[in-house]
Length: 391
Image 1 (tube, rainbow, N blue to C red):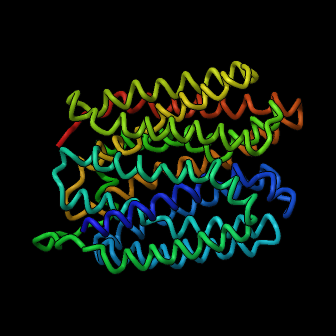
Image 2 (cartoon, helix red, strand yellow):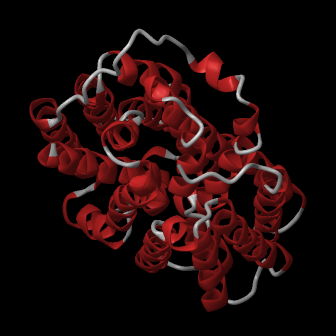
């Protein structure tokens, strides 16, 4: 199982890479394919929306056939196949479709690990294990910054995508060989995601799950690159460095959140102050849309660091889920999280377009930050009334 978890973590590194690498490729894709920032934001949003839509069938597959076949097959067909489609792209629409296919392929890899943690390990260590995989996986964010910039300069972006397709296919094969499915739950309990949706306790957690990762993931995947380029005139290399710094902040935040529920004896009251940090960081970017380059990067890092409570919120929701619905439970929570970021990437594209049409490009980013401020606050309010739980 150790080798299997290592390969699942490697697949999640690629998943993180694929969800965030468009920010660095924005200039070359505009030159070669005519892909504008709103095209790339739409492509990134489609990745997340397809990923989110897949969580219901992935959850059922994890409970019925196990993580080995679920993760290996989808990652091969969608991950490797989508990378090939991206390498062959000739128009912005091809990029959008390829990103949707990649989102399909990446949809089971993190949840396969979380399913194993929920079924095999003690609930007390779920958040720490989940944060560890998430933190290591966020290295994919770093690979999609300066290293990707250097690779594209050396061999070209199409060649880089062909190489990624080959690596993805190899990892998918390794998952099939090494991952062991946990034993089936004893008894004949049956159920579906509808049983989970009938749990009142989860409905106070879902809004927080829906918005928690929207700001940090959306800013890192789409907006930091165009913002720094349009407002401060940064070249691709400098944008790569800035996104690298934000990626490091996100990794640090993930590992910081991981053990806090066991140390402090609470999950709810770790998530709440972290979410306040996201609100404050986004609000500062909104109210000071041109604060200076260094200050702007610091604020992006603040949002990135405090916006990584994702595994802790999943652990909070999972604590209410019975073992025979573990797969559906973790994927339902993930549906809200990934669906939120996909939804608000599409929304912020429209908001930025409308703002740019009536003002300067620099001023058009303020409303984007306003959206992230307001939605995070809106998700935080019902979460204040949720029931804390550690088991």
